[in-house]
Length: 363
Ligand code: GLV
Ligand code: MG
Image (cartoon, rainbow, N blue to C red; front, side, top):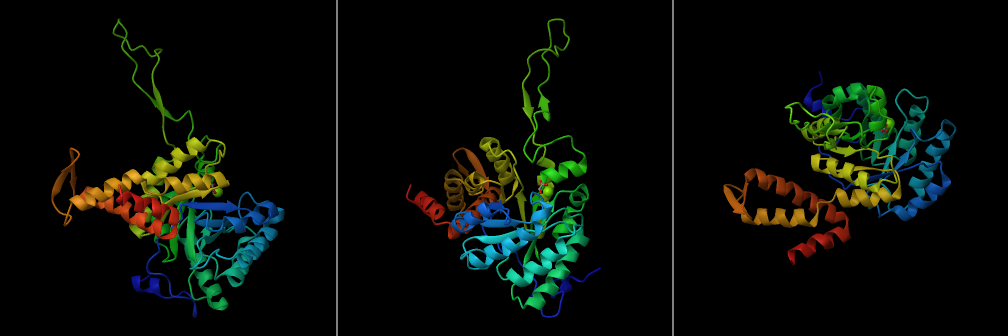
């Protein structure tokens, strides 16, 4: 057992102090790019300021032959792109390192931390199985930070994409003060669980419920009659577990990838389900998903208008009031305060959103 006090002592002599709180920085869209792809890399400087986080992907989707050039490309981009990463830039810099059992991960860590550690905000660790994986990354990061003389700890984000990881989700979230959040990895998770799907996230037409059959004149259920069926969300259970584990540990949950780039409508639905359940953002695999995530993960004008009315009507926050025929009390006020606080955090970094929320007051 580790004493609670030890959590906030550096794991290596000279490493920065572990964070006592994870800052709520806007991260509605985490846009993935392959740093070994020169065409993609060339677009990165123009994207700074248009997206909350840019993530240099080193893991899956980068060919084995390109692993080294992806790592080197990320170093170049981090060094040469003003406003990307570190505390001051408008856009955070994240990376997804290779899996802990891969031949590349040790070089990922030992190269990236000394070269661009001061710009890297969050390291995403794939295929996390349990607290032991986070402990490994935690210690090695502390050693590398100490060696590089970094003064700010790099945060760690785990992808929930193994059955064991889901079972261990609470201990993963609490394994280190560096833990920033979790993302759902629906593609790997589906394979690891032996789900019978072939997609990268999203729904499946076969996963549904059907209304009961009508009863025929003979009193027998007419199972052949036309009946409405409703597709269900394959990811509801996992996202809900992830949200609770993150909330319990003061860190942030994210929906992961939505692979059907053309289906912007279903992507928006999946992102919105995640937002409503408590997630703060999602991955973007194509620039058009950035706009979707920015919109979906920002409270709507209607929500903020209503939330502010409830806050104003509730005075000292106790008791109950009737607004438009609906009862509002301490608990509905707390929900409204969650939305108002999120709107304020996002508006502080997004001037267009700020103007939109400010205009509500003038209504
Ligand atoms: C993401 O990494 C996934 O496996 O869905
Ligand atoms: Mg994966």
